[in-house]
Length: 293
Image 1 (cartoon, rainbow, N blue to C red):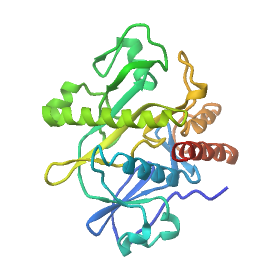
Image 2: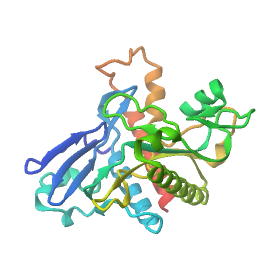
Image 3: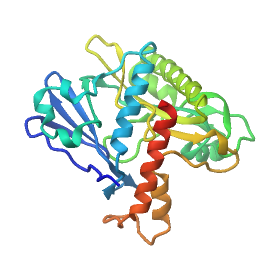
Image 4: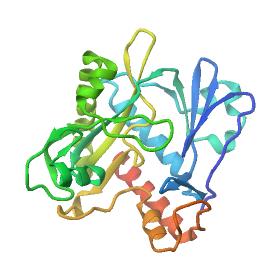
């Protein structure tokens, strides 16, 4: 199994931020987003990574950015490392295949979540209120039920901690009615386009989240990553069965293994067996291969 890339170093670039997975740098007139193979669970970053995960995230994002160009402009300039500023190539051996060079944007402070199925926190909220983020839903839905139509269920974009659900009225109050309606409209359009395509590959797109930014002239731009296994819940249509939780094409294998241990979900994390990491890596590769074949 290939070695996981956990860190990169660009000493000639300004380091802007470290996320759970990404490292962000300033270079030239743009930003460099490097998707590492780091993995977190229960808000703790593991000492090991999922080999090749960052490459899958980058490849899928480029695939979807290209596919959605007719719907909305995106921030991606190139994933070709040789086309990026010289100072952005100092750690080329680690970065190749997992790096995006993108336009600088003013990021919209709302996570634009779209749900086509009832799962996760949405299922939990539905059981309590028969609604999700203020959107009323029919009675009698089950865990993993397909919704009558996709719904827009935004959240805050927290710098630390967990994102919190928002009602559409709260998005309007924060951003103004015009921008809020634009975000909802384009988020639902992208979700539906992605779900329709995934269905032709035997994949269900249960839910996803989008991030947007704006250019200096106010134009809305699709940013960050798009329809990756980290930002989306993908299920295999062949094994889908409402009334229970579904297997997802993501790091679920690692979470499931951690639940079998006596770990208290506080640092330091336990050492994950190589076979579990290999299975997780294969799961990421499988969703990429099925969507892009």
